[in-house]
Amino acid sequence: MRRTIVLVSAVLLAPLALAQQPGVPVTRDSIWRGIFAREPLPADGSANAVEAARAALGKALFSDTRLSGDGTRSCSTCHQPARAFTDGLPKGSGRDGVPLNRNTPHLWNLAWSTSFYWDGREPTLEQQARVPLTAANELGGHFTEIVAQLIADQQMTNAFARAFPSSPAVTDTAILQALAAYERTLVSAKTRFDAWVEGDDGALSQSEKQGFDIFVGKGGCVSCHGGWRFTDDAFHDIGLPGTDPGRGGIAGGTPGLPAFKTPGLRELAHTAPYMHDGSLATLRDVIDHYAGAKIERPPVSPNIVRDLTLSRDETDALIAFLLTLSSESPEPPIGTVSPMP
Image (cartoon, rainbow, N blue to C red):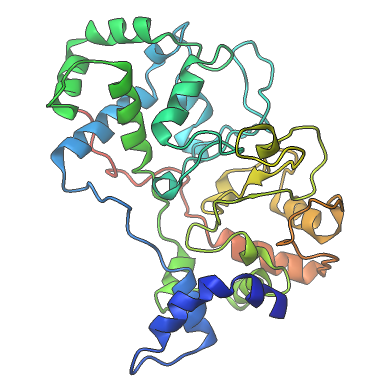
């Protein structure tokens, strides 16, 4: 526990300051509740009619096969809402049937992210969206053809005019902005863990509370999976086998360091298999990886607890806690984004 507190000491300062306000008792739970309290959207456009129109348009485009070169695929082919915006495969499936290089990540809570892809190579959602749309083995689309097909659809041209009133043309930039606007609305629903954060001491069972203690204590999980989204948005080598260079293979990364972005843990009950390569099928596999199965090599992140051992009961409790981060349904609540008129 002492090691974990040192690692997250900077994170602790803000909630501790809040807890020290007059009349607010400082307790262990109040500190952790402060750390895991939800944050407001970076830019709340819920009352903005134009932003709402862009999100509705983006939702329609997300499942529109006209964005692909052969008219058979869309964003939702791999990011399936019924699977919490994943595909359930170890690695995404290419147009030619050959698996892609990495696991399909979920799309929850990306409005707070500042880099995208497992290696963080794209700095915005708009830039990220362009890549799979035009990649030959993903959607394989061509914007000249995509734009021409959408312009031929009067309902679509009307939707673009509502979403971009100052510049109502159907363009590749507008398509990407609409898709990004929709993806920023994908905020994971509150769960029983959030009820505990908000003060309901009975929201978690004793086993789940034990798992939380392990998560923030001897397991050291909070060192990378902190905050309400359960990610530090950083890149780490976690000791997985393979030759994928990760962030070490792109500009801004450290050459030779196979580091990958820390995934957020919200809705993880619906997003198996896990890791950038989809190599771990279950949460138990993930925990076993950190508790003895990882490759010990010099670049493995110092955030990871060395020589971690967990009993069967401790593993069960940790899994029970992790499952409290998921809602009953893997899809966004109905009505989160209004349908396109």
